[in-house]
Image 1 (tube, rainbow, N blue to C red):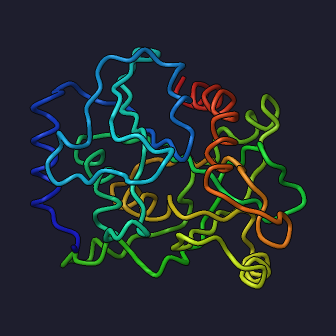
Image 2 (image 1 turned 180 degrees about the vertical axis):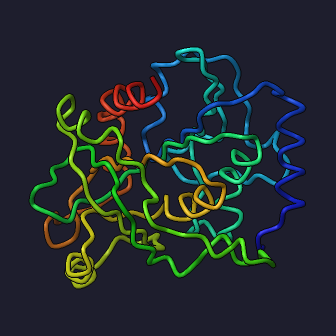
Length: 262
C-alpha cells in the first residue's frame, strides 16, 4: 500500500468521532516501554481497532491502543505499541498512525524504541537521545505522493534543544540510530559494518515514523533505550530480554518525557 491521503483522512475522521478535542503532543512508546506513560493523567483509551485503516501490532511488548493523557494543560496522544515492517506491513501502513497525528494538528512528537548498543560507551539500561538516523530498511513511506512535496529536507530531523539538560539530569547518551528491517537480529559482520558507517545503536523501528513526521513538519524528539548489546558483544539475544529490560527503564524514560513535554 502506497501513501494515500484519502486513507489518512478517513482515519482522521474516525478518530475525531471518538475524540474531537485538540491534541498538543504525540508519543510513541516502543517495546516494553508502555509504562512510561504512567506520569500522565489518562483521560481516554482508544483501541487501534476503532480507527479506520489502522493495523494492530502483533508483537509481544506492544499494546494495541492510544491513550489520551493530560499533563501541564496539554492533551497528549500516547501510542502504546507500534507497527513494524517485519510484520508484513507496508511503509505507509507502519507510518499511518504518525500521519494521523500530523493531520490532527500535532506538531511535537516523541519517538522511543528499544535498541541494541553498538559502542562500548553504551550500557544495557542506558537511554540515548537520537541525534540522527540511518535508514537501512529499504523502504520509505513517502512513495506514492504524486507531487514535489515528497522531496523533504532531512537535515535536523531530531530536535536537540533538551540534550544538554538531559545529560546533566539523567546522564543520557547521544548517538545515531540505524534502522534495519528485521525481524532477525544482526550478524557480527553486520554489526562491524554498522559501526563503520557511524551508527551508535540499531533497531527495527522509528525510521518510517520519523520520515512521515518530518513530512508533516513536526518537531521530533527521539530516544533509544539500550535493551541489549549487539552480536559480537552479547552472546545471546532474545525479544523477551529486550522487553524485560525496556520495562525496567520505563520509569526513567517517563521522567525524561515529562521534562520534554513540560
